[in-house]
Image 1 (tube, one colour):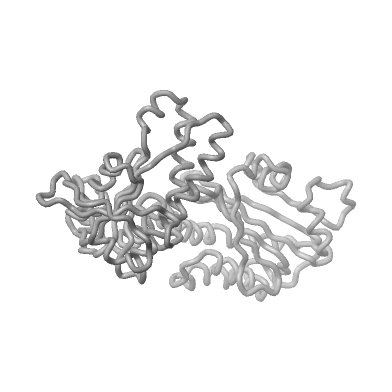
Image 2 (cartoon, rainbow, N blue to C red):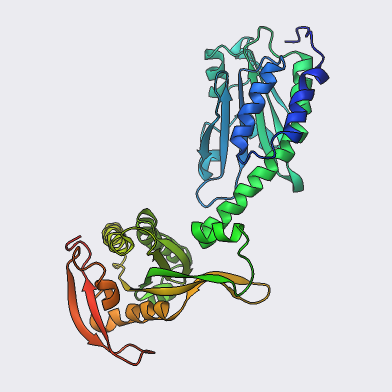
Length: 401
């Protein structure tokens, strides 16, 4: 496993360390940096055939990501890692398992009799690909964060001592470079998760001063779950959380698919906008409502099998100019929309109970979609906070879409 090497390890790694330190400033993505690093290590004389970088991330759907490079690849492959991975055979007994449990190195001679080595499908896969040696190390970020990096070779005899020393010498700089990119991605992910993609981009671009904002013309949609107080009072807490998550999935996924942006969840309600700068924004809103209705019907059918009552909702829709920006205290801001158009959508949502229609549209909105969608005129109604009655239209999702 320790065949002699012609090039000292310091010489092999110096150029790669210098490039990581000074040559990656303009590269935003860690997977691109990782792929180029591996190619440069090869060019420096290190017999690298395969490498992976495993990082844990704070994402609502994924525990982490695996970045994999192999010989001949110009770009690395990125795979997402589920939260339940630690309960599966691919993790149990794996190098990642050993390192997460505290090991500081996992080294496996893939040329020796498999009966004498570690038992895991990963090692069998690498042997089948002709790899001869494998090493995995923790990659340390600040505040005790541990990630994982692995290297493998097909060189007869495996990695030499100088190869391993060279690979180890790049880790401290790679840790710094990767932590910056991962935290940048983390900031973007957290903003997208909690305030939406568009608002997140504005905040990252510097829109963080209280009172700053812009006027946006948009279709506004406000949705509220019916009888939630009764449900939350009578159901176990975990069941209520599951119900809300399922309900928001049914409503939110179609909104995102059709170009809308959810600005906030308020208890059992949500506020979303479809900017009129997007083509067919109003029609897309109604398409999203149609798909949400189908998803809610499927959810109610599933819930019926567990004895739960069907969930009902009300949606109010209006169109107009809104102020889109930062509102709040000196130390706690909310990036949201305000204005009479938002108030109108909220009042229409409340009127769905009185009118007996689950989706109510203002005339201003209806005029933008009437040729394409079949709407039902339900007459003029007084709207709290507005001096004149408002002509309303009902939309039966699926009709004329």
